[in-house]
Image 1 (tube, rainbow, N blue to C red):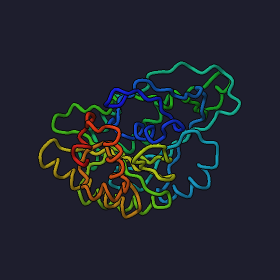
Image 2 (image 1 turned 180 degrees about the vertical axis):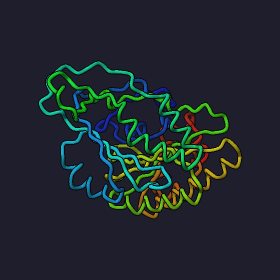
Image 3 (image 1 turned 90 degrees about the horizontal axis):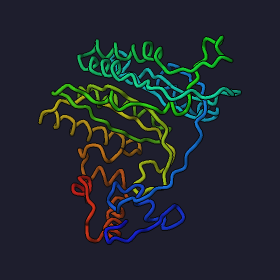
Image 4 (image 1 turned 60 degrees about the horizontal axis):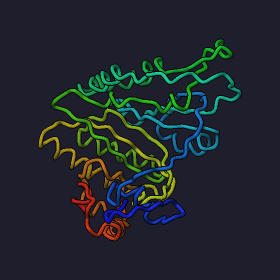
Length: 317
């Protein structure tokens, strides 16, 4: 429903401009009344974990991970000072060939308490960060929800996880009860052949700003049919979860860190995710998203009354 009350049924084929605007418009174009979603069956996956040097990842992905029938894949970079953004855990899920047993019911395996403990412990300093990374490599895998059916009970290395279970997670672990701290999520996107130099630049920026990084993940991102698409082609993203003090000085430090990270991303031909904190400058937004002026023009076309707004549009529109 647009601001004039008119209701439109849109898709990639029907009113594609409005469809892309609503899908990637951060609520600025209208209200979604109904949505038709495609779903896929729940299936069983074979889970694997390996540790590599971060410089090996692009070649490993190109030559193996993107070629083999992996269904899910992501990586975690070390946040420990001794191997900061250098050591990398790769998690992969592929079809469990020949699996015929019934899929087990979804279980609550969110591990909120231990995850929250290690995140808070990482804030105490170098030792806490080293312990947190050791736990991620060696301790937390022991609690993964592996399902071993009777037909595979003798295979000690077997770890089977259903798709629904692999994608299940609780946001409870992200809720901190420490009154002096908050945690900031950021995401940066770079061409796949620029990941290694980007991580090197990101490491330098984060160390110069004395950032307490609680988690650093790498994932694959594909283009979407949306306005202000952060991936114009297949890219890698670096997702950062950073501790911040809840003080004016903490805000200033995060603004400086964010702008330095955006500049580091721009040097590698990358972009950044817009809706988190509005710490980036207008010129940085324009450089990363050359179509942003056209985006705002479309917003005014479909919402001339300026009924729909948000902090992003108020700051940059």
